Amino acid sequence: MKALVTGGAGFIGSNLVDRLLAGGHSVEVVDDLSSGSLANLADARSDRNHEFSFHQLDICDPALVDFIERRSPDVVFHLAAQIDVRVSISDPSLDARINVLGTINVLEGARRAGASKVVFASSGGTIYGDVDPEDLPVNEAHPQLPVAPYGITKKVATDYLHAYRELYQLEFTSLALANVYGPRQDPHGEAGVVAIFAGRLLAGAPCTIFGDGEQTRDYVFVDDVADAFVRAAERGSGLLCNIGTGTETSVNQLYRTVADNAGVGADATHAPARTGELARSCLDAGRAKLHLGWEPFTDLATGTARTLDFFRSRATA
Image 1: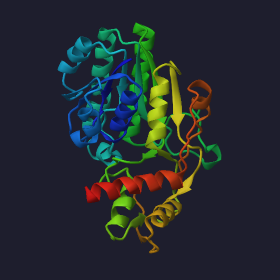
Image 2 (image 1 turned 90 degrees about the vertical axis):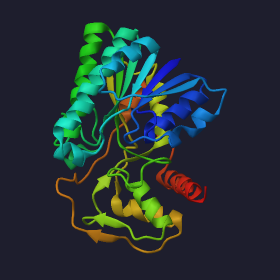
Image 3 (image 1 turned 180 degrees about the horizontal axis):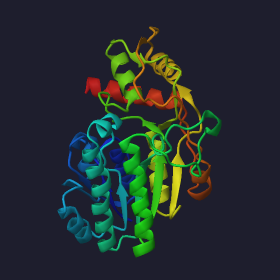
Image 4 (image 1 turned 180 degrees about the vertical axis):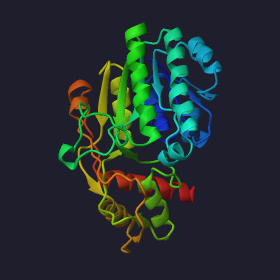
């Protein structure tokens, strides 16, 4: 398979790139490096046996369409995005430009290149909105009522995927990701609470939990997510599939798990809750099991231990 990965220098994208290269696939990465890093692609770039190339290009640049057409990928994995919910609220125009108009550029390029499929990174934590606890874990049949611009753009992008499938027979699979964590996640970012906890615990710094810590999320390990993307290249066409564990974990439970793995006994401090934060979130991944043959295989204790090992190795490198 000749794969093109947008956002391939980012956290999830670079892990996907490694997985694709390990499978013997040809991989080209498009990334503007606004949030991704070439350091994430060090392994991919250093092995001469890999059929790999990197291209610094913004998905909002109209030149992207011609670029994708010239490269003629079989499958486009579209992960490039503005991912900060708070940024989407403060600057919804920026969010829409990147996540909607940028996605249209990707789809146009894929269409003109004759690609067989686009596999898209959607957001299971935002597209469904504030779900009634009785509906958790939420499945794909649930109404999509996002309450933040970020979730709206992810919903709209999937609508465009449907349109391109009907108009041009360009297949797609949209993966609604739960809270992804693991090696290479930015410990200074807004979404990466596991990385934030790991970085601070290893530095001997206190960790802060906003609110009472009983808010829940569905934490899924990045290797498991990369596996879902690879499977979606050949399966699940025309579908939105949730990618999560189906298990709710409170922030308090998460902190204790990471702290125990780090050998830290201190409790976290608490700060006022953030306005608009969802109380609970959890995804039913039954459709992914049925159509992709996918299930999560990394439990939270193992995944957080591996994340801590990564940050330890980076600190001593």
